[in-house]
Image 1 (cartoon, rainbow, N blue to C red):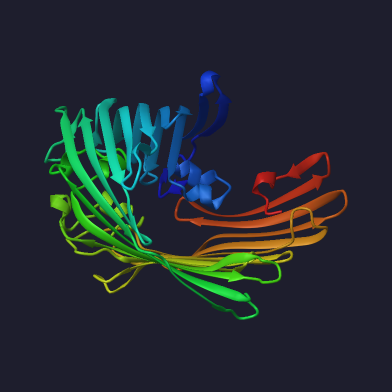
Image 2 (image 1 turned 180 degrees about the vertical axis):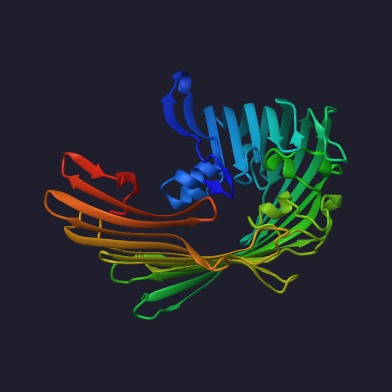
Length: 469
């Protein structure tokens, strides 16, 4: 690529390997290896949009076995996250190896007050490499998380308390200036959670004929309280994965699920045609025991397991209200809308809506995704994705389709794909036009052709795995 008077190389390599094997004594081996030398290479040369914009490369090979109430696994893991197209601007996390032994809930006592025991444990040699931050190539982390739980029931009310201990040893830690120290760090945290589930409320009534003969509305409320203490040094923990995001917290989550079921009396068919879910958390410690740093993006376990979108950049007593709406009156109609409303900012900060309609050989899919929070937390986004398709892989005659991705913030179409196919009894002919507009790295138009002959193969520049039909 020509940038001013400089020619920048866009070449590189990608490698993928998938395998599975059954080993003696009930062990199973799985390998999913993906290597990418340069994000710019993927942006410039890959033939699909989703692959072009995917900025990560994950590789894992593991051996696993389950026996009785236990799960055992030993894995070699390498994750690489490309922050930009600049060489070396990546975050690499290695686990060489990661050995885990976990258990299901094991009954210790029965009767009116049952007691269950479960645990997660891991012994790992890990490393993290990025610009201006690097651990030892292999630094140990040992984690043990045992839990005891019980359940109380009375007339449909359920109360489930759980007590747990987080014991973690790190071979290194982060100094206050952000550099790595070889001094070890031990974390010992106590966790208590209490889940309260009252009886579901139900009502059955006559439905509209076009939808169902009988409709049932079910309301399922739930309250969960969680308290964690013993993580006073959150900033000193090196971030490898979700185990390292544990923070002090004193919080309660309230959730309500509304389900609508429709029943056809003649056939006995029952379908859940409408679901509305709402949940929000109340934080009684708005600074999370000192883990939250105002004026920056904070990633804590108390936030990421509520919504995948970051929202903690200042002390706060409550989270955004997260809602999900799903509608599916028939198998060929569906709509889903997921959004986060932040009362602190007074607006919808994240929204994603998608719908799909299929009528015989005709299909329409549309989706709109927007991030409107703060650029300090997440890059702003506003995109429309759509697909219109008529036909199928083996339909005789004409088949056609169109795909688009339009970016409202930048005001242009990032990706477009138009294809037309004509099938006869023995062969098919396809022509495709594609448009890529991925910034300075890629701005091009493509025309591709393919001729398919039954029981022989496909010829041309349009690969079979990339065709719409």
